[in-house]
Length: 349
Image 1 (tube, helix red, strand yellow):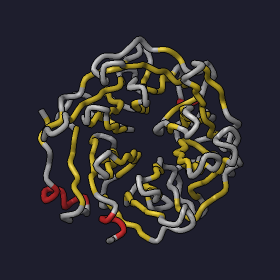
Image 2 (image 1 turned 180 degrees about the vertical axis):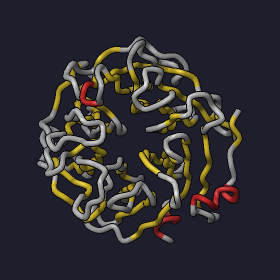
Image 3 (image 1 turned 135 degrees about the vertical axis):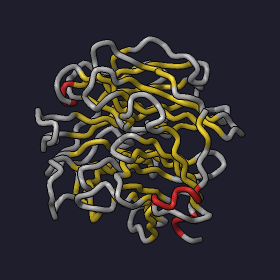
């Protein structure tokens, strides 16, 4: 079992405060040091469920998707178990989401070549609260399609799954023609469709999306390019005005982006939360910003993790009790962390 770590022991993370709790969930005490993009979901029974992919390295064939559970009311996370492992291939970027009908979806990436541009999206389903999973199926045959962010239940009942098409054969550079798009699923007809693709100057990938009104949706995205020092590489943003069916190309924002993942969610009170690395070149600090005026301004910001390590790939949810949860990886992709706080910890109100 994995003991919840109190915040007082985590001052090296730069977050010693009574209104922000952070725990290390999984780390190097487990076999397979590599642990990267993590996601979190609150299941219908109140359990919290974290999934990540792990193994001996990002491109190694022994990577698999692991998941652990914090039962409602418990203080310890279960030991993670393999929930997806594709023979002879690397698995990555799991996303776990429970749909309104109770079915839990697992989306993840399976690499069929030397780089992530050779990837396809695979899926599994669970009808017993993520205790057992179906066989895997492929969500699309086109190489380079990947998933990273949480699906969105649209007001018309459709599911909107954020995906992206990554290009390029260099493991250190994301091609400028990398685009973001969305899979749209109609559960009444069991029918899938794709939106148009969102372009940006350096590429647009790993979109996170919110629905502001029935017709108006906003997506924030990671920029492409490399990891070299730059003074002109920004998070990008796109809009839909027809319920997510078609999208504008992406415009650059005032938020820096060191070629790193972000997350963007709508809170229960309608406020917007953006979590990202507030740096042009480093994956530190990890910052949460709040907008109370519908994405016009983000005056309230707070670093929830900062220091000499990398704090990356945030994934955020708000649970039914109003708490905000952010999972992210650190220490050179060997540690999965879980932060819990109220909105007031960012806004001071």
